[in-house]
Length: 161
Length: 247
Image (cartoon, rainbow over all chains, first blue to last red; front, side, top):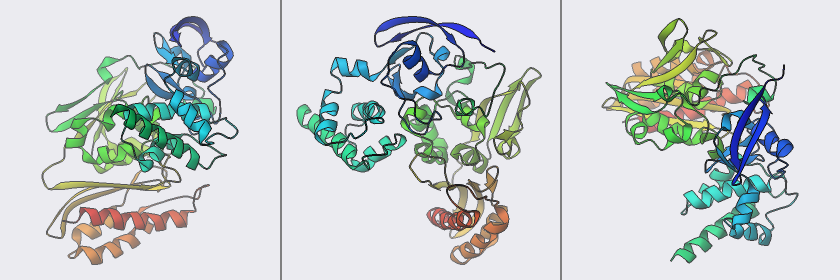
């Protein structure tokens, strides 16, 4: 049974209107319908975090949100965060610390790290690990990722002095 | 949503209730804290009312999934989903909360103990939804403790314990021990509770209460641990949690 519903939302500052099958989750919608391939489909049941995107300013699991639920919502993917320069320091730190190997988890890691550095400026390493606990990385062993996020928090702290 | 993605659930009709403002919010009603079914985990986590009046729930919230899930997931959703390894069903049992239910036939309330019936199974009838959970506010002299073991912070527990009770001069007046991950639904360790409440000296009673868990709990083997390991770990948690509640 196919049920299509019209939905309009803002994706990366662009107004989008589509007829979407009711069962389509957000990450499939972004990838298949809009061609935004940054958010990944990993486990598809909320465990791995590879599909992390922002809805109305907060990170969500793209696989646990239906596209039709997002009428009127503001969706942001890493393309947008990258373009605005919001996470330039995080991206640089991930590169410099070699916090990337295959790259599959990296987008979700950066989306989560962006919320962490914005909302928890005083997070220590344990708090960073806890905040990133919902994002699996099967390559790096996390150490370099935690290093990268910690260094950005430190840089931002210095910059705000 | 996870159940839909995994094709474990294939409903003909799916209704989005996100916009129902009647189901939102957290407020005090008499001597109870009313947590709307649509209160998001993040909202509960940072709620001053929750922290003040139902500290057990405040302690549990950081263990409920991960930030990206807490931003969207709801209190009522976690209750209605009834995962046997989830934190909140055990908390509402330990606190003696009531589940408020609405359906075409009207509204009804059910004690948390009666609400959960099995693995992902509840007393909800077809066409019914959870509208709110009403939790008795912490009474003077009562304290709560929460602990869980998980492979990764935020995952469903291998085993966990939500405890609420009143201990005075080393004697337990009242104690509720709700284990999760210890059976098909959250389970009260009634024999262990009775042992501790009836016991004279807390230290000696804890060892005996631990041995009661074999009868109280009903864990099963899964990919994370065997039933025997879970039972052992339940005893470890009991000791930790009860230790923090002794006054």
